Length: 217
Image (cartoon, rainbow, N blue to C red; front, side):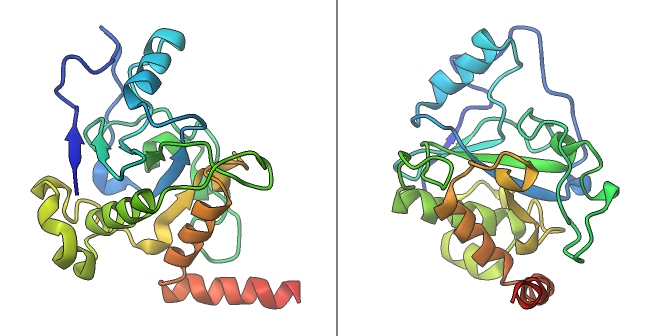
């Protein structure tokens, strides 16, 4: 697994004076997966957010390019501007949408991962499909961060030690797509289906999903 750590790279676009505020990693409630809605040139993406939108830098913690390369843009304790102030529907997976689920501070409590590409969905019928290498890299990155033992045994050695189990207080049920925050076309139907499958490895989520399906029937 190829890791591009650009946190200390002076050539990577970032604002001269602005920085993202800090957050407590132990307080994170989940991870949110996005797509760029463009290509996988992350330097261009970061430049757009710095020079075009006057932001501190790339608005995600991680990026995954077309070849499955994983880009580490910021330390995990930086609250990047990715999800906006939207709440998360039913973050507790108890079937009830509560005000507290998203706490109206989605950037503080949810770490962002972005995949290069503009992916197909019911809202974007001209979009592309994620590359297999991206799907594999995303699954590996999530498993390493969550401290999944099977994933760590397979690919853990490819990742910096600081990332292995860094979000071990979370589980697969805590991985969301940007659509869960109200951005319906992001990150596309294929990635959304993958995330639902990963969520379902947690018994509590499986029970809740089954209840939803039963109600629908």
